[in-house]
Image 1: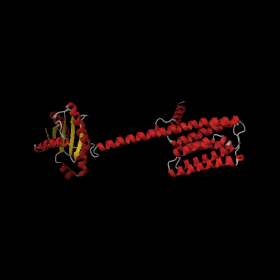
Image 2: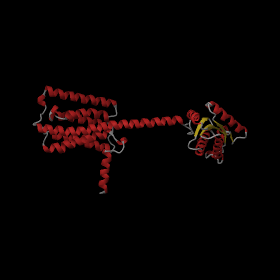
Image 3: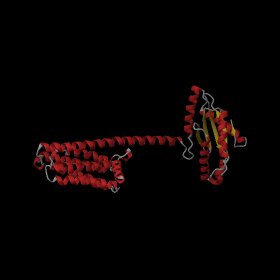
Image 4: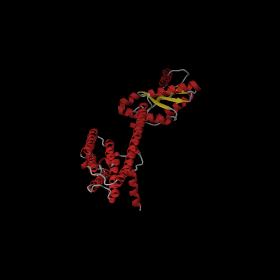
Length: 364
């Protein structure tokens, strides 16, 4: 019983996938071919509603095309040539069915129109689409030419009941196919929109972050400054910036090499971001200099947060080569109406005061 449930679950997942990404156009094509072949072989056939006995051969072949194609697709052995072969075989069989099964009075014309849609939905290579499109167009033109020039070649329906039943079966089958095609198109748009949104978000994130350290870029920090200064203008909410510089970083590069220096910058940034609040912004100003924006704190609060970062950096060596690193910090509180350059200059002066005070300290 459990095995049967697994089989049924696989079938449901295959034909009715959970996510749009699992919806594969080739499955639509072979599923459509298979179901239409089943309908004609097992529904219409037993009631002898075909006009010509040869149709009992062509329709099961149509069914086998879908069955074999679907099986190859499931096994992952479809390759690039088989879809073209199967579509070409179906186009030819449609033409044979047109001649043997009522011509324009039959529903084969609908199938020919649907094939135009399926060609563009399934094939990936443009020139194959163009070749099969014109091949199908030429077949359709030839069939209409035969219909009007040599009508005796077309085997007509023997009664209205047969024609009605045949058209009804294909109408509902075509309705399902058209529904699937529109579903595929809609889902395709949804997938593309989702991918475009994700790509845009990634692009924005990539533009905001320094590729080496993961810290925010200077440009992004400037945008944060503008937002906070506007907020200060409305609410008088304070904020601070902290200039941070790794002490004697040139010696690290000269002694251990630039790769070790890069690793130190990465670990320093990771430790600093761990020490900050969620509302704070840690950015790379340039080289071994970093800039921290601290919303809703004054200079004293900013100095306390900077001291927390300093202690976390200096209390243990970096894992890379066990390099001991310290940093100096300069804190500046925003003054209403102050420009970004002026605030940075103020923080930079405090940083130089920290450097002149023996390094590895915070000044504000």
